Image (cartoon, rainbow, N blue to C red; front, top):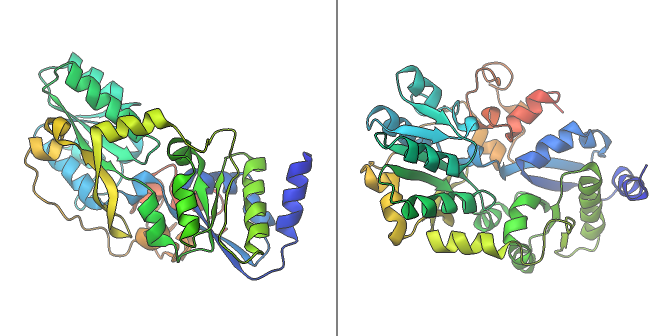
Length: 349
């Protein structure tokens, strides 16, 4: 076994200090930690809690309602990633809209949606833009391409979000964050260092067993110093300045706005919308959508899970009414969702 893994595992298994609450912000981290069996070696005084790092999970119910309205009432063809299809809206999901005759196309990249619009000029095509800094540059490139091609039948319904202000909203929820490596590959280290100056601790983590164990061991050791800390434990991918080209295209096409996060409410300047020069590609403006406030199932505790207030298995619906086959909340639908991870890897782990 790799010496780094042995050392990190020893630090973790032998920890006997005060209770540490560590939030895995990234849904992929949650799934990998389960899959690799890392939770099984944690002492009782280390608690891993899941956070709002699944973009589908934090997308509010009202966004699904908007997409359904575009599909059924405005006659638009909806292009979307597959994990949004079964997310419940107030009355129905996109799968339900498709059953009622709506045209829902699954695509793998935003550029696929542009190509579909170019190939089908008789159809009004709307791409559902959901994601963090990791995927937002590709949405921006798609909008730029649509503008260059002069497409009048393409638009985007945006729910893009940025992470820094979400950390601010959650900074009392955990002792330290496991920052998502793929987000920081775009944003770099600056936001994390700023948070450290404000008293928020965390490490950027990769996704292999070695990288995750190392990140947890670093949190344990640094926590013992009694002061805020930040460490980049994923330097092979995350550079200090991140990806300047990715940030540049985001800044060119989009600007910040307030955004609603499922479970967290509206967080100021945590969302992105199209700038004025690209506003004709904004589906909300193009189709004069009314302001929609969705209503999630009141029994679903997805919002509490995303804030680290409870574990998925604490929800009365979990594993009974709410399963991957019949999801009640977005956290059970998405491949990055906390509830789907708990269900897939033992339910009460």
